[in-house]
Length: 143
Image 1: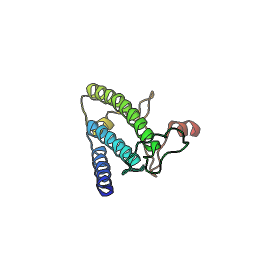
Image 2: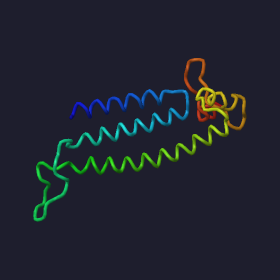
Image 3: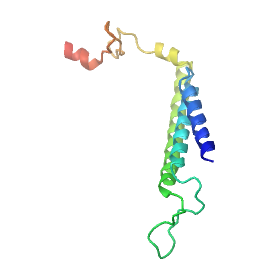
Image 4: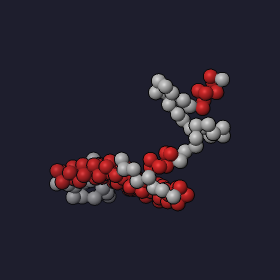
């Protein structure tokens, strides 16, 4: 069973990484969601997978039974699922609005939609001749 879980974790993380590296913004967002699910699966697998007893303290004792499941990874995984779902919903709204406003879902085209380097209101970050990235803070300090 442990090999099946390890294979599922590997497949989930691999697919998530592949999709996150895509140029399509929606695929990238889906890849990040799958990466989060892979992290949840990894966290859940860190507890006892083969435990048959629930993580409940029997009446009259102060500790869990030796064969009981570990409740901490279960609680952390449940919390991570809820937070990940809320983040996914918020990200989906932002990405759909971005695609609607920019009329493209290509990440490379969205990079070209940034302001031009001579824009006085919002200059973009641009690399120097030596490859270092100038920030507006460095430009103000040089003036």
